[in-house]
Image 1 (cartoon, rainbow, N blue to C red):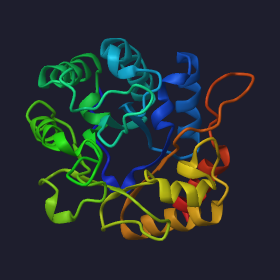
Image 2: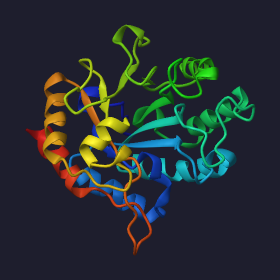
Image 3: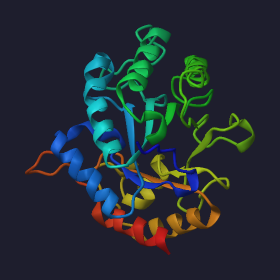
Image 4: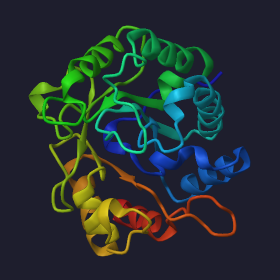
Length: 273
């Protein structure tokens, strides 16, 4: 039986419909995985509980049922997943509860993590786990950011794979626990982050720069020149790169997010040099 290990950060390159991962049928997930692989991508990105008009938070088990299936499909094709369980920086809009709410208890988080560990074969080898992203005293939900830190540090006990650290969105290298990946949410396309990090396009500023709209919402990456330059800079610095596509436009016929083929091709070509 083949034994896999998590690839080094410097070999991580990918594209993720992070916020919209659940909007495909399973057959679509297989096609998505195979397309990313054919384009040289080694990773996709998922935010399990994020900007949540679909209320995925409120039925965690139903969301996990779907994610377990998604992850098994990705792993079967040797596609790695950068998984953020909780995007701590979500705003309280459209009835979304704050992570400070009592429903998000230590028991709630422990249940989520245990299902990921117990139900996804190969999880430790193929999932780069980020318990909470964008947590800290200057982020949203700052009144309970210590809860996010607790969940993040606690995950190191049961998780035998690689963990990812994203304190304050762009953490300094000296804050990162030993052996963890540094997840750097770049603010502009000229900044690929500290050497050895995973550079992720997860800020409104850089997505507006690359996609031409606030947070890149409803838009594909139009500024391919800037995207290419950022990817090449990441590769030269020994960094990984993940394109975080926030709210890709919805295909009017198929009613699912559009996969940005031009962006993926640009990432592939820039990464290969």
